[in-house]
Length: 163
Image 1 (tube, rainbow, N blue to C red):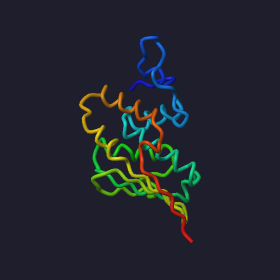
Image 2: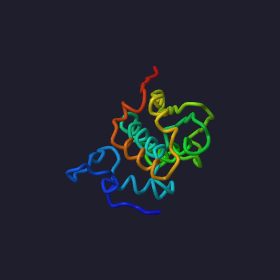
Image 3: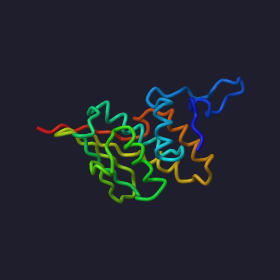
Image 4: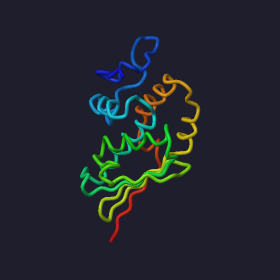
């Protein structure tokens, strides 16, 4: 498993030698390396989990003792890899029991903190774009593309407050 000092080094360069995609402000090189170490490799569903977890931390606060997460997706790789990204960013884990995984056809994540909840559903066009990965290179290229996209372009997002 090869770790990178900056995932910028993995991104393709244009004819002028400059990188085509700028480093994401959401996913730092340190966080990416931590996630790759935890998960074992770079892939798009890992990145989706990282981005969703970071967004949830921003909206609901990062407190793994209060946050609960429900993930609905196919419970096999590569879809289930999203769970590892969520674990790395939120501190919630399957072992602590504050992440629940449910079998589903799409990818939907609900983060709950008290009476507030954040619902994120992967956009269908994003899910469709991830169905044709046949090599490690395909997976890494798609992961890097997703890393450069805004979370609102990847997920349909709603925030609900109780009370």
